[in-house]
Length: 253
Image 1 (cartoon, rainbow, N blue to C red):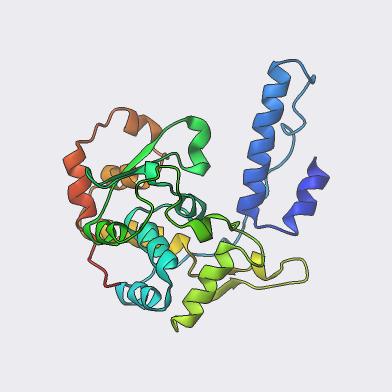
Image 2: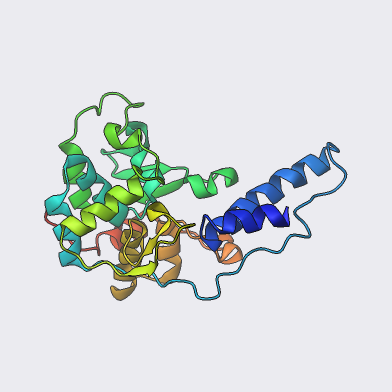
């Protein structure tokens, strides 16, 4: 198992390697509980450490508007969802109309990263995003994707969504620092740049913080679970979440 981990470390980032190990540990733990195997082979495996983790950057409002100008209709929506809802790339691309309530202004999803916990995230729809969503077709089919073309693509890979977003950043003329360069073992799809789709999430959280939105409200909106005990004793009114989201600036698209 340790040798396998060393092998994939040459192909993926330490964070991704740790996530793979975490999932395997859980799977083997379940197998152990059900007596399919005698012991969990992952228990003695040391998780890889990123001794110099790259620091992700945030977009300015002007840069986000620059992205919107060069994006097609579906990518415009993806950018707005990434910023105003803080959804990760895969979750945004696979949004369906059944997840969207335009009458009550909510988007409700089970994020892929925490889907195993069975907790749905409910995010208020910002007025700018609401305006965009009203312009889309397919609202009468709850199973239809908001972004049907992008929903068919994978996130990683040479033709994946991550690289397509990186191309958008380049087309918008935004300088994007290379934090982890390409090597023979780390192809273009594995390079790490300062600005990624995930940076939209960082940008929104930072903007909320700068507007004085309390940390616990920001955690609720972004579905962060670091302070699980704290969240268990904290309850939020829907109005508080709506008020927080409206503090994000209006973007021109």
